[in-house]
Image (cartoon, rainbow, N blue to C red; front, side):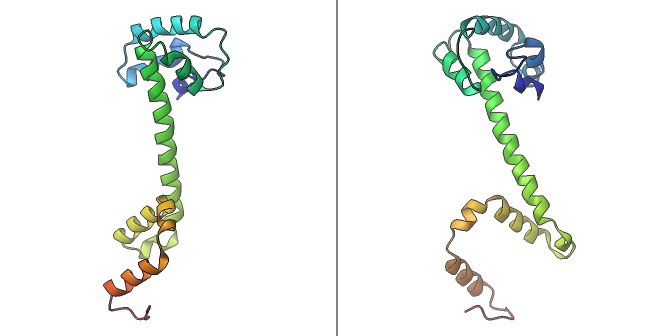
Length: 147
């Protein structure tokens, strides 16, 4: 994760090769090419004002022939941050769903509740009356009459 911080222009180790190197090995990106591209990018970006990694990509994208591996690395850094945040939200939802009631809940019901919790935006946009009607018609053997 330290490699990601070296991609941020506000980091004290911005574009430091030693810090970025583990990311290169994990993502099968040429270390030699990136090392050369990092040296050139530091020169190109020296007097540029940049707030975040998006600004770095904007500045370097016009020179994509000169920095192909570095731009690929920056794209990976952006993508992994988003995908790990989505995973963290999903696990947070699971933690709320798996309560003391878990022992009395079937696996199918737990899975369905987890999906509803994770995809709460989609679930909240469903019309409640339609959902209740479909549930009532599919399950005739209910103790409480829903309709």
